[in-house]
Amino acid sequence: MFKTETVNKLRPRIKTAIQQLLDSATKNQKNPNDIVLFLSNGFFDPRFKVSGLSGYMMGPGERGWDDEHRKEFVVDYLNSGNQEFTAKVKPENVERFVRFSLNLELLIYTHFWETDVALKELKQLANLVSCKPYDWENEISEREKYEFIRDEIREVFLAHGLDVGNLIKESYHSQLRNAFAHDQYAFRGKDTIALLNFKGKPYELQSLTFGEWEDRFLKTALLFYELLHLKGDLLLHYGQSEPSLTVWMPTQREVTFKAVTLLWNEHGQNYYFRQT
Figure 1 (cartoon, one colour):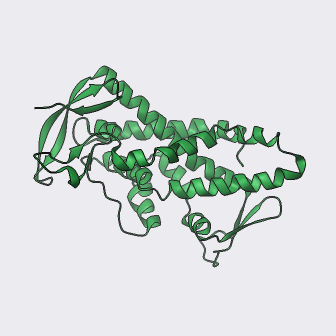
Figure 2 (cartoon, rainbow, N blue to C red):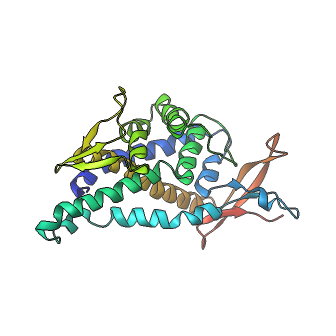
Figure 3 (tube, helix red, strand yellow):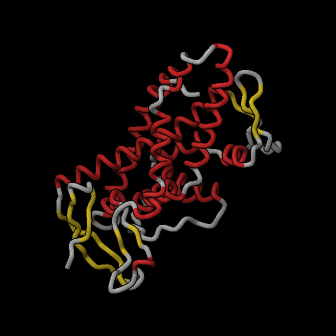
């Protein structure tokens, strides 16, 4: 169960870290306006490479729309006034409500570090800060998820001196994800989450206090929350200042690139391809 005061304490650092990340991605982008492709979610869908269509598209796409309710749930939970709501619970039910909240937070935490939508965003930003061209296909590696997050996201951010890398290091732990996914955790006493998948390895956690969990959970949730909002703010800034701009799109399966024009759709709050 998170406290509003902890949110207020952590949020300035996390918001600054995400802004720093977006600034670095913009500065280091390989091609002009690659950052706009990230903000607008440019993607390739082979199902639409028919009848003369290229398969390259803009917007959330089917997977993005499918993820809207998960985002809605997380935002609603963070805005729920969790700590304040506890005051309305009968004293004899407070501990039960705390456990209820912690179960929800473990679910949210696990989904953040598992969902392809969230990880693809971080991977795309890692590409941009590394001066790699925008990846229209952006497939998630088949490697172990913790190795993918560590090597292709976290370590890239750390190598570029970005605090978001530290935030991931301080919040993400694959053991926590596995403990929740496989029901290998238990609440003990009034302030402890025991991890039943602890095997005694140096990098493993045997348990963590509710306070330690709150720190990990909020750093994770606020990282994605601030990315969602700052990404939207930056997209709106581009749309209002540059209603028409040029981006580079692959041809012949990325052997060559061609310049294409994007136009801003004020009603849809996103860019779209100019029809030729």
